[in-house]
Image 1 (cartoon, rainbow, N blue to C red):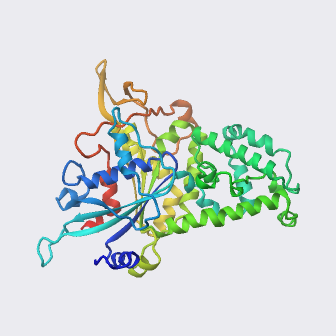
Image 2 (spheres, rainbow, N blue to C red; image 1 turned 60 degrees about the vertical axis):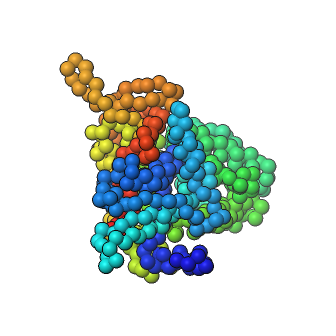
Image 3 (cartoon, rainbow, N blue to C red; image 1 turned 45 degrees about the vertical axis):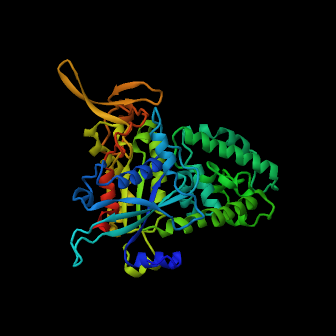
Length: 463
């Protein structure tokens, strides 16, 4: 492609030739997006060398020649910090990369030989793979587009279980004496909004997932702006909506409604329009084990957040014209991350539990004939599988180093194959231990089933 072509025209031609793919790596906070992206780039960079990618046919057959980072399409967006992530993993001792704090992207040029030789003989081809990273906290705002301020306020009240209510006590106390018809006081609204944001931050630290608005958790350049100074009002479900809409412009209700609408229009919609509506493929990363470890209320909270989130994406098969002018996600993977935190015989259970967690969204996707695959993986391994023999009996265990530097052998517990009931939480529960990443040997990072994920997401483009 001549370099004098405008970048937009070059991208359009590449998409028309089916030589460009946009991949959305989606996940809530702490699901492992940064680790996944780092490993993906690392594995493709080392394809044909140290990388173990037996489940990716192009690699297994020796046709995958490698990948290079090239200039990304949008030069105004920061580049994904791959080098910094690798530096953290290569430190002594190795540490996990810093979590995502803003939007970034990266373009890989993947070089491969097609599975069938052309008339020209040993032809090689290239696939441009665009990767996008963004804070998981911001992802939580997409379901917010389905609400108006009244329905959102009521939904937030319904989401308050006993533990979340305890964590939100500061906000509940601050908002107790405010009424929808009161005249808005800017200082007071800002104080209550900060109490609400603090409650959300406490809930996140306690392991909850369904937290809105997401920018309250990671405001970026919006910190201190009035658009982040709103919150749900309790007790609105018993008031006639017509009465609320007739309140004066300067009332608390009308002021909070305007800020909510402004947040939808000027924060959430541009984020969705500029990033999520342009994807071709998607992988949704889910920290099932973290939720299983955190207890029943947090597990139910994760299920609710994911179900709402999956409705926010545009899925469906695409023709050539739709690839060019109206892209939709035509292939989806859902992955339970951190599979190395359970023993290998539990991996199948982990995948089955993930499918149970997303049962309703998966039914809708399969009804729409959207190809979807569930799997468990570890983007970057942190443990090794071992067997421990005691009194003549052998038990599978994990060997790893905790974040505090202690070498340990553990059996974290059994993963249920269906949504856990009260008996599970009473009888067993789950013991999740955070480990340091394993040092890499050679160039490629150790992983579990990254090759299976790559095959599903891009394998058909490398034939």
